[in-house]
Length: 524
Image (cartoon, rainbow, N blue to C red; front, side):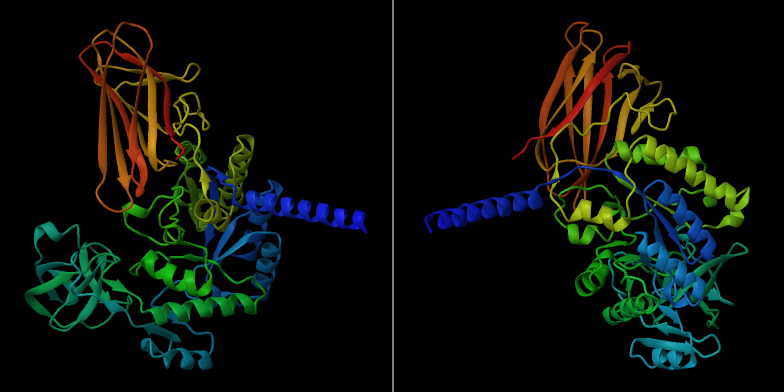
């Protein structure tokens, strides 16, 4: 009996220890990382989906497909998507009809049901399209009042300084009628259409007060509209045997964009979405923050880069963009619309670009993951920020002869073998939008060599998610023509998203040499 009790106690101790180990592993911070995600938007021929999927599978990675779910009616498309999803490719919600403020019904019954919704503004039985209401903030502080006229549906007699602001897709409000119109540029004229993009009769107006609405801010969808769209996408995915979508992709084009706050509140909290591609302002548009103060919002700001062969870009440019992103601790989401008609050589040439790119990524051990995987890495875990975040001056993944991430200004050169930068008298070594910056206290250092008395200036600009950017400037006087370590400390505020890093010098006509750049967070 005593031995049995001892064995039970021993087992209990071992079980407790095992639980503790598992808890420690679960809570352990993930390694700071950067990499690539490939997204292919809009519905395409099943053959293209299958062949692209097979290519990714050969390299052991997966792609993302942004689907317009109201249009997935063909059995072959449905079967292909199910097979791809079973193999680990990710299906994203590109909205039911590639729009927020309208939807195309697939039957007369569905049209009647959509048109009877309280959120419906009007409907077109001929096309079975239902148009939805919007919420207007006519008093938004970024709205711009101006004087202008409308003649034969064309905006005219506006101030010259408004010409560039009144651009394609921008929305204007006529305060006296409450009508909102969108701008299309046709034959050099600013032609007005309805808010939804319809060609409508617009009463002529002589010069009167008009309002240019704040871009993607003064107009937003009602919460009930977003709930309807999310439910519709979920039903469409489930009906054809796909997993429920968990990533929201903003359609481009005519419409005003939805704020990430809206998407996080409805799609995130209510429907369980874990990532999204909203189109926010510049303060929140970068993908690469770590241990952010608002991760549940930022996971919906994973904007994509349209560098792709069907947009006229080359394989070399795609490699460059990825290499720059990796050096700056960022995730690069590359999107393509598989617009094969734009690619010289057609589908085979298009596919070969991705094959060469995947080979290069594999050779250089650059991670390729789906958008949801990156969202979890960046925003669901505490990230280990130990170590130097400055990219090496010896690394040139894309083979363009320059160190990845750095900008060499006015004759500045870098020896990739030695990792030494040579900066002439009016030159500068720069690094912009460096992510992976730890919050709190950090130390920086660099080694410099030049004429005695040369004044070396390091400028750091801290880019804030919210609030005003701030900068720090440190200057060091060189003493003797030998290598010196120049070092200091800086406090990084919690809202810092990235830094700009610049090295220059003055007081001597001769160049200086720089090496061993370091920026390290001090663990609290």
